[in-house]
Length: 245
Image (cartoon, rainbow, N blue to C red; front, side, top):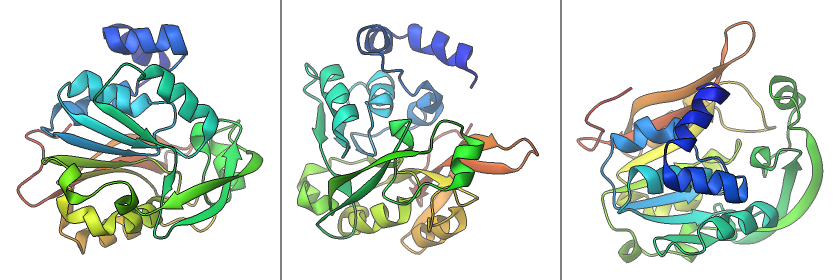
């Protein structure tokens, strides 16, 4: 979706238009086709940044509860401002991973490209302006630190946009993964963050836990036409969307 098309889509939805004009947060309207094809009651939004995905959920699935996780203070503050009056949205200021600890996050010049993994030169080459500018201390903890199975009304969607840390974040969700009908994760075909698990490893890990790929969305390519990354939708058998775009 090009910038003009995205702007027009944002401005066409009242909630999204207000978030952009008041807080400078552009809803992730590129996710509308996926969200509108699903019927879910709970969305777990890991890597929430300023609330771009949460806005898309609230516009597409108005009855769904959204539980978001964002470890960086600046985007978390903006998120809280956007959703201050929304009782269906909750934010936890933490990253999700396999164990509870204080650790370092590599902060990008564009904070939505920040990662718990070192930012590679290839990332900045393909997406200019995303080089590391700072390192901060954040908290990481398993999902079960904040939620129990009883908190996850099903059908449910687990979304991950954690810049190369997807496999570790999934491991941090494993004790509750049986309560997730769908997983929607950004996966890469090349190493944009040092040591990251690539798409085939994520697919294999989830396949071993009963999930199959149902669609690939929002693919990006380099100048040579090589696929770089995309948003992958995984569903348990029998729980996929009615249509795939």
